[in-house]
Length: 309
Image: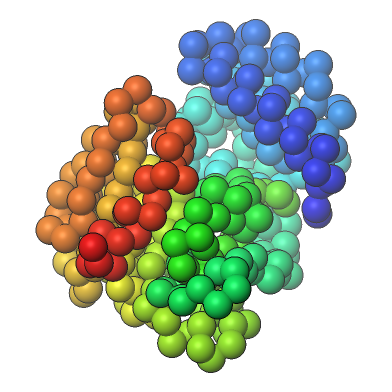
């Protein structure tokens, strides 16, 4: 299921507004906003039903949350079981009669969709003209994003002499929400993308980069050396846990940047602290997002990751 660009843009604006209210604890206002616009975003039926269920539960009405999930499921919505079973917002909903049936139906649809999931070809950008190529930058998108969105953020690397290869995950949490929860599946997606490149590209030193869950996947790729050895890593706000960086078989150089207002900062600081050759930069006042000067910052970070002046 591929949304139109305009629908995708409107979905992005709506969820930003709803999540801003969520962060303020204004759950009823967020539900009203969602209710007013969700019918115009049919491609995102599953995503918006999950969001509405979380808001209902936070507002103290788990029965309404379950009803929202049931109603969406009747219309064909589905979610990967982990989205229903591990989301803290849905804790009171899981105790209700009928929740298990929603999970069972969603799991069956999810399994079918996952078996059929195919990533679009990677987005590849190359330095212009005869400019020497220094390395290959492997970029992994954030959760709910895609390869094209990732490529747009990291394009400054191309002017710095890198071939940019933005990879798209095949791991679906909803019909439209792609992420990187399974390291083995992530490695397979990366390997499939690299296999589309000509031999000279595949012989270049590799820098792994990514945002949020993609940043975590890039770090784990660098630490495991799978599916390809990584010379350096550049991660933005990686959703990484300390136990994921313990006992790494490889010790890449790299840089991690994260905002001082990002909820992931404490766990990211601890996780990166276990990697002696990875430097952590904290941007004052930034939330879970790219730094505003990322285009200017990125080339120097890549030099650090490659160990080059």
